[in-house]
Amino acid sequence: MVNSTVESMLNVAPSRAITRRARDYLQIAAIAISLGIFIGFLAIAMFVVPFVNENSSAFGAYDIIRSGLFLLAGVLGVVGLGLIVRAMTLKTENSLARIVGDSLALQLGSRAPQFKFIRNINKRGVGYVDAVLIGPPGVLVFRITDIEGEFLNEKGKWLKRARSGRLETMRFNPTQDVIDDMKTIKDYLEMREFKEVPMFGVVVFMKDTPQVKLDRKDAVIPVTHLSGLQQYLRDGFLAKDRIDVKRATAIFDVLFDW
Image (cartoon, rainbow, N blue to C red; front, side, top):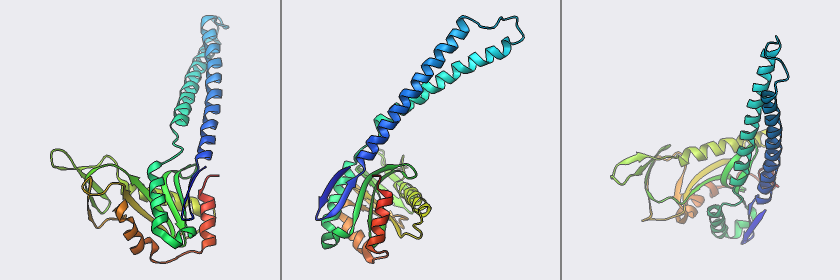
């Protein structure tokens, strides 16, 4: 676990848990590949030195078995390699989210100790989420990006101005990402008896104008520069408290992967 505490707001990343998961993936990969190699050699041996005569009535079944073993060996090898790639690509930190968390702690001021910020969530049942802020107002889900350009967000649709000057559909949709993450977290909490948790979302662009120009029209999920996050918090998420600190702490314990 990597920690950063600014003005007493907990700002954490479950890096130890993610490292453990990567180690588990590598162990399973080693088993899968070793088993695949053994089965592969067995299948090759069955082809090189047939244990059943080609003229035998049982040869058809024998041929199916050795071909199946060869295929199984290949599948185990692919699975093992996939697990290795997965283990090597698991991020243990999100530096952008860390910056956002430190900024939040300063913006929350004297209320900071009531909040907990989890960055780089990557756990079973939830998947990957940039960050969440948990406190008396509820749960705030973040989608954080450092891309540059001129963007139009109309309701749930995103367009980016291309070099040609035309607005083109973006390759990813931050609004949909947040909506999906909110639903996943809501379902995850409900499965653990946390019903009707106030859930909010926000898309945060790290860079300000002129690097990032934002045009928003009836945005489904609030969109802001990092520099404007405090205004959004004051007018939206922080407008009122909706759960007590004890419940917020319990939610943190469920979402944080120890």
